[in-house]
Image 1 (tube, rainbow, N blue to C red):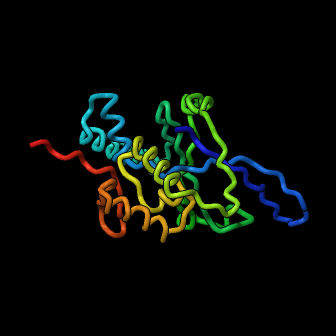
Image 2 (image 1 turned 180 degrees about the horizontal axis):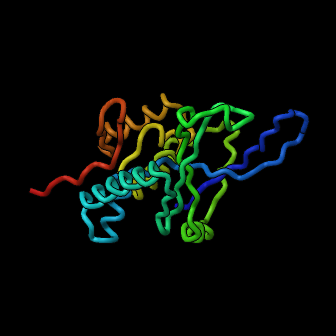
Amino acid sequence: MCARYKLAKNPDPTGKNSKQSLHPRVVPYGTVRIRELMRDIESRSGLSSADIKGALQVIADVMAEQLDRGYNVELEGIGFFSVSLTARPVADQKEIRSESIHFRNVNFRCSKYLKSKLKTMYLERVPESRGTLLSFDERISRLMDYLKLHHYITCGDYRGLTGCSKYLALKDLNQLIHEGKLAKGGYRSTRVYSLPLPAMET
């Protein structure tokens, strides 16, 4: 499976350009969450999921402490993290005190290593739908390709994958559950769908 992209119009704040230039934009299949990352790391490193989860939590806590102290943080091979601040606009530095300046966001700058790993990524353009909905078989084919690489999928991920409405997405997913081709998990607000576990031999 390769990454997909579409061409989107560049913004035109003035509204004067009759023909706007286009730029490519990745169309994500969905979001890979920590459970899936842990499974992949576990298979490559021999570390247990519990060890990986614990290490990631400690890293997040220590990073927060160092950023809070005013340091930048570098995770080698991933990137650099720094804090940005916000305050009301002033013309003279004497017009504002430290108490009026607050945390705004964490900035991220990608490492050279991570960039180099992505320079050779293979891309394919998402065909223009022109209002034409993928057939049921095409939608299910995309779903099964997705589940070969991911532990589960959400309804929102399935909609992004197939371009169908929420009503049709739920209809498809429930039909596959009824046919025994999908299993349902999670709770109503965090419902997920996965391939069913193989039946135990007796």
